[in-house]
Image (cartoon, rainbow, N blue to C red; front, side, top):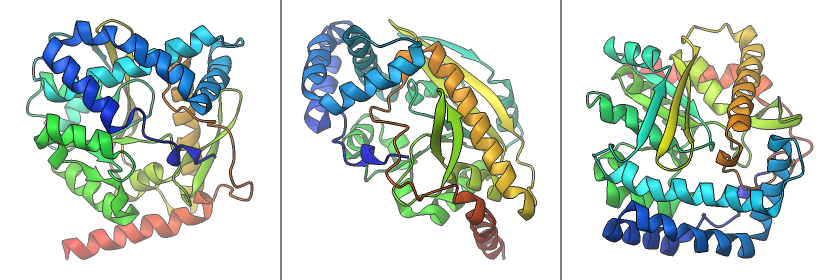
Length: 328
């Protein structure tokens, strides 16, 4: 899978994000949304690689050749969700949004039993919109797994808008074992831990699965962690439907059963395939919500195969050994 997204500049950068934040806070959401049109035009003209990637993806999702208008709508949808982050992260009053929640019963039931859930999502729609569930249940604790080194502008925005949420971020740049242990501690404390599972980091082991008519690579680490930690997993999607509406969808995925070492490779590949199928389903239902603006199907390293199959046993066992040491 291509890891070129790591070399692309962060969408908008600190200046653009601060501009959106300042404009929206002083003038409100409705006037700020008018500024999205020149922003869309700017990115449509200036960001050639993203424009080409958008057209290629939309042609798959729409089942027809994507037009320049489709690409503009794609960029505008992305800009609209970036704008809404200012309000979703920094405004306790969620009445400005029409949040429609489905499938949350299982997640809430786990929380009521005092155990959290690993919520696995993607760069489809707005994962921040899922905080709407926490707004309706103030007793819910939400912990975000985020690579602070990759998104400094958004990390700074989060720290300024909601220092409490920022302080509870689990930094993905600390390494796989450290992240796994932090996730385990949070879930045992009853938190909902959110993790995106559709971008591969350089050198990371991958799992290949059918996606949008071709084979794509997905990171193995989310499924390795779930297998090693034996935690319940749900898929989560916050789809932007236009205007002020977001559809928040939760789907139970696994109950956190123990997996035998000899079965881990098969189970991990099955998890990646199920995840890719559900991701494709929702991406086709809301095609302009896909915010991976790079060639998702390109492979930088043709020699990199399903390395998770060979790594699954040792990685999961390393996490379990550390957990046993901590308990001791």
